Image: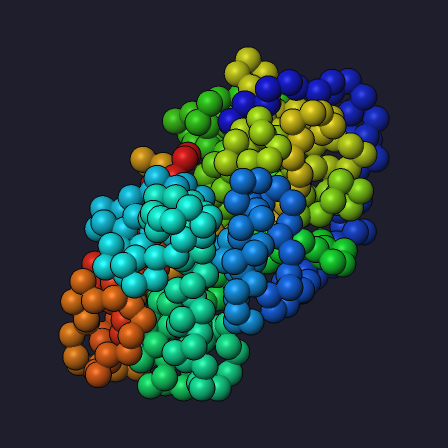
Length: 404
């Protein structure tokens, strides 16, 4: 990640003398992690969804009371990183990663062009919302949080949710529900000041200890790299030093928490730059805000880790990192594809013994018997669950294509 136009650092010396750690500590208080808005009236936070998809996600994310635009955006980001051409190794297709048989049932003409095209992002957005709302109807009589039950049905199938009277005791399903709801907070426009992270002071302290270190493209501070970093390698290591695991690349780190406005920036926030301010997929640089309009960052080849001003034309916004937000993010593979954050595993209680539904079965029609959760250990997104009505995919796969 390269800072296209490095800001002047000369004035930073005076800011350094103030002492950023004290500034952070005074401003720090515990983050609640609670959503700012609820139900399907929640608005999308600016810059979190590509501009071309913001209106449709806002519209279709209000299709039924159990979903919201931020929740729908979180699902689409987890499935494909908003990539309309995503294709998984098991055959899931498009931005919403539908299997062909399931698309045949739930495919929706989202742009009224007379076609239902899984590769058309507007159709994929509409179809994802339609599928969600169908699942919500299937588990409408189950007590508890209706959105959580819908998400559990998306991952494990409606039969399992009905059987257990709510989220089933599958670690994968419980993780999926938690992660999507946490990730949705990153997509939700704040309606109140965003709480400051308790870990921000420690992250800044780590970055300060690296001042003057030469930049290295792809650098993660490894001994083999002589302790050098690139921009996102530095921010990743800074937050790792306080126990928060961030994704490797800047445009994924963008979703590790809520997004304070420019006038609400606090030390420890991650600050980002993009070539297209209407498309977060073009984010190319990240730094750690330290106050007074400055950040610590690893700017570009030939430079060293230093203080720079944050105000420039490519500034897209900031993220206030939280543990839950970082934990919820999908994993990006070496080929740039995305693996969702849910982790297949055995249930906390004995698994049903009936085998999973066949791969060509359309969800979410309830089957006559429960299916077991995946027994394989490979991380996987919920995309492949679209082929199984009663339980997590037996493949444990779901590596969806996305930009790195």
